[in-house]
Every structure is written in C-alpha cells, then in structure tokens.
Length: 152
Length: 454
Image (tube, each protein chain N blue to C red):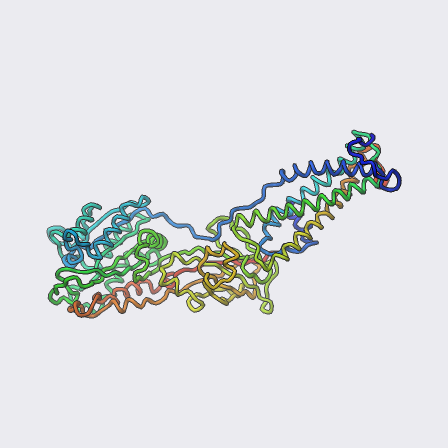
C-alpha cells in the first residue's frame, strides 16, 4: 500500500526512473523506503523533538517561529541527504546483484534523476514536517502557537 | 534552559533574527539528527534485491535411467579386433570405451547394458542384458561367438519398448546402422521400416540425436548390399551413436555424456535444447518499458510497457541468447535468416538484427553480456493490454553431411571410402516420422511475454 502511495507521489514530480532498468529498484525499494523514513523518521521525529522534547519535557527558549523554521530547514537538508545516499546505495546493490553496470549513455540521466529525487525528498521532508507540526503542536504548552495559532 | 557552554561559540550575534540561542538550537538539532539518521539507515526496510537469475530456463525432467545398447553381430567384429600389445585400439574401441566409462561413472542415472542380437529358435531374445565389465571387455577384446545381428528397425523398436517401461530413460544405441532388409526387394522402402519402428512412441515425446563417427576396421566387412564380404585392413568405416528419449533428457545427455562428440557430424530431431535467454534492458533500449524480476527462474521474461509503442515510434529490445548447449555446427547458423519471431496480432514485432557477442562493442564495459553468445534485436510497434507472448524460434538447419556419408551400394567400400548403406533413407525415415510435429522443425522456441502497465 505504501509502495503504491509513495511511488505515485514521487513519480508525479519526477516521472519514471531513468534509466528504465532501475524502475523496479526505485519502485520496490527506494520510493517506499525513503518515503516512509522521511514521513515517520525525519518529519515525525523532528516534530516530536521540537514540540515535545524541547518545549514540553524540557523548557527551552526554542519555541519561536524562527526556531521552527531552522528545524524545517535542517530536516529538509537531512531528507535530501537521505534520499541521495539511500537511492545510490540501493541502486548499486541491485546492479551488483545482477552483475550489470549502468550503460555509459545513461549515466547522466541517472545522475540527474537521483539529484532530482533528493531535491523532491527534501521538499517532501519539509512538507511532512509542516503537516506533523499541526498534528503535534497541541501537545506542547510552550510552542502551541508556533508557527501559527490555528487550530489551538 | 541556557545553551550549554560547550555548544556556544563566542562570536554568535546576540540580537537580530538569528541569536545565539537559534544557532545553539540548530547545532543541537543537527547533532540529534546525525545520531538519528545513522540508526534510520540501519533500520531501512531490507531491499528486495532478489538475486535475479540472468536467464529463464524451463524445468528439466529427471534423467533416471540410461540404457546402452551395442550391436553384437559379425559385421561389428572388425571394429573390435583384439588389440595387439603395444598397439592402440581402433577409433571405435577408444570412443566407445570412453563412453561406457562415462556412463558407468555418472551417479545421477541408473545404467543398464544390453547387446543386440538376432532372435533365434535357441534364444528368442533380441536383447541380451550385460554388465559394464562384460561390455567393456567385448569392446576391447572382440566378440566371441558373434551372432547374426538383429535388423535396425527391430533394434529401434526393442530399445523404445524397454524405454517405455521406465519414464526418465534415455537409450544410447551404438551400431554401424547398416540396414539391409532381408527381402532385397524392400530396399527401396527403408524409410517406412524406420518410421514404423519409431512409432512405438508418439513423436511429441521422442527425440533422436545421431552422432556420426568413423573408425578403422580390420576384418570382413559385410555390405548392406548383401554381396560377398570384403576384407578390410584398417580402412575407415562409419558407425553411429543414436540417443533416444524425452526431448529435454536427450538434450541433457548430449551436453553431458556425449559432449566429447560435439565436434562430430550430428543430426538432432526434436531435441529440446532450451538455451538460456533473457531480455536485456541494459543494452541500448528504445521506448518506455521495463523488465520486472521473474517470479521464478523458469518463468518467461516479460516486457512491461509503461507507454505503448506505435508504428511511428517503435520500441526496441534486445534478447540475449546463450547457444552453447546447441551443437556448434547448428549454433553457428543462427542469423537473421534462420531465426524468426512469431508475433501475435496484438503485439506486432519484427526481428531487426542478429549478432554475435564478438560483434557487440558494449561487451567490454558490460561484463554481464559475456553470459550470452548471440543477441537479437526486436522492434515492437504495438503492445497488448493483456499479456501476449512473442516466440523467438530457430528453424532446424539442413544437415549436409548425411548425403556425403550415404551410398546406395557399399559392395566396394575399400574404393568408396567411409559410407553407410542407404543412410540417407534411414534418416529420411526419422525425418518423416517427425514431419507432423511442429516442435521437431525448430531447434528452440523461446517465449517473451509483452504487456502494458496502467
């Protein structure tokens, strides 16, 4: 289920993987793996960290919108890095298992696609963090109104 | 909570949008993330790197029984002349003892050894069971009490009757295959005798491999022409090894036991070679398609189109073939003329080019290509919505050596050279037996499935 969901999300922005021989690797492993890790690992944990750890369990001065924006930026970079490294490592694993290398003509298309994938994942990381923020911020006494008051 | 002294460098600004608190917070967040992401990477779902086998090969039935039959008749005596000390045996002796040794040594199938002889009132059997030791000593040392040999069609039907008793049996017949009908008036109709003998088994379930060889012959040669014997002293006389059995098992036997004979003139009828093959999505693909990993190693490779090709924008795919299991004389004939692509209307496709591994420039950069010997480029101008199968087939090439080994009169073999009486008609009988069997007209028929996604 997640496979189809994340595949649709990523391919809506990126198109089909290039070169075509990596389509299976992307759709079966990379999209769902990185998508789930970004959604729950990076975005959710980041939101919980900001709202609960920094502003509920501990009391820190980091409850303002500018802190939240820094968090957003850091998480976006992390999501981008995760996408980049994970995609490359899975692709090389799959190619090694099959014993083939990316043909010379397709190498630039492949690099472009992985770069695009890491940017898109950074975007999704930021987006998911924003979404989780709205879900989680009610639990934080100090940061309830960060970034905006609604819906609390 | 004041930012820990350690994390706070002195030079951060203390006012403005980004204060020292912000910077400190950012540092904390990054550290935490660094720690987290390390774990996250370890917790990634295990990637489905199914070590996909490179090629699809159909399941092979099990070879469980090997019956070896040697023709024991006066006419074979010259092949198995007793060998003087210090001399080497005849070609027949060397080849057949090697083959017997290989049969004896292999562990996967149960061997059984038989001599053929004529049915007499004293001993009505046509087959005389024997042992490895007895057969080996007969081949090395000569026939004692050589009986009259049984006729070729009887040999074939007896071997097939025995073969039918246990599934998974392959029969290996070694003889000079000189068929001289008792009634000389029937010589014109040799083919029908052979066809009738082979009819013990349905053509779909039988395959025949014929390996020709010649050996020096010392002794009396009895011509098929039924003229008087001719004394030969080392001249070459042909003998043949026939392999009969289930199509896939005969292919196994050819590649295994009989691989030493791979260079000999040979003919194969309905043998199921099943060469390994795959659709290569990493060799110059054109169009939008992908090859999903096969569910099992034996399923046919599938081309899944993400965008349908059209006659104006065709897609091209390369199929790699490994033809090493085919006899070299026939594998070398694989070309655009002998290969054909059977495409249904729903998935129109044509064969564009066939080339060898040696002619492929990408082979150096792409080591996976060395698994294949031939490549065939398909051009697809349409794709079906539901799965359809293309079939890549190779027609059976003609065998030129049969005519050169055949003669209508072998009365004077000394002058003629190595020839066999009516060999052409004997093998024409085999050919006709398989005439209505479409799989016998092809060396292989490899399916490639095509479908569209979304």
